[in-house]
Image: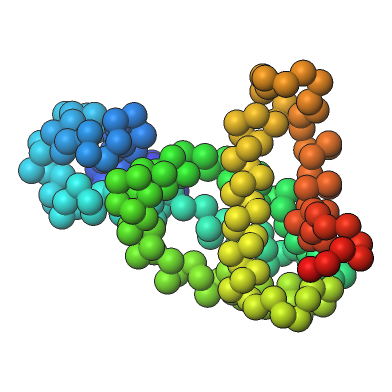
Length: 211
């Protein structure tokens, strides 16, 4: 939402969230005080923050909720299609990757939650996420082309593992412009995306090998 369309209370809330985000990403949650947030938000009175958030933990939870790109991801999933389940997965991966890369700071906040809260903040928000993820998994299965033994929740977890690992390694080392400690390693999706998707969809074991 454009900040010019926000009322005064909403503008103050946004200032607090933006300031807290910068400080949390720099100092961590425990390394950030309410006084620092108030100062970063434009020298607000510390007491004024409590008119909008009950605690520093409430600020962090609100940040994870409003910065999460899941709504954009699920809107993308609803639009895309494929002739079967594997093709649908192939079609959604580039779009999801783009959304996630455009919201990289959210994953910085997520790592803070894992490190300082054992993931409890994000876990409390999963109730609004899991139903949409299961709905997508059901659509993938209904299109066919996957083993029937794979449950919807198993497919959701496998996709999260694949996407998070693929995107994290791409951000660190394998996208264009990254400097690698190994010479002559290609970078960019044109080299990596198809073979990695093939390995995810069809495995790495040779045909005929024992399973």
